Amino acid sequence: MSKIEIYTKNICVFCDRAKNFFQHRNLSYVEYNIDENTEELKTMLKRSNGQKKLPQIFIDDYHVGGFDKLIELESNDQLNNILKSR
Image (cartoon, rainbow, N blue to C red; front, top):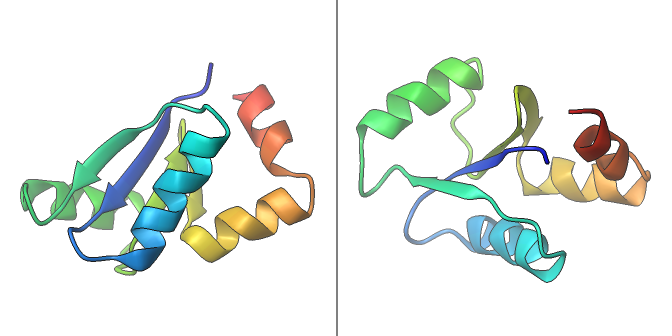
């Protein structure tokens, strides 16, 4: 099973949407809230090559990006391939 990681903050509609997306598909994920642990912000920026928008989503070592990119992958039937290939 692929490891899904989501970097979030407390007040973030798109963060909530990303978490709901995975919950509705019964996919577990690890959440790193940068408001609650500022060290996670440094890690996120390094992993995302400086991208600051939230959420930042990773599937194993694959950087999905934000919620819009997640939905784009789902719409193009690419998300399942990413989940299976990791």
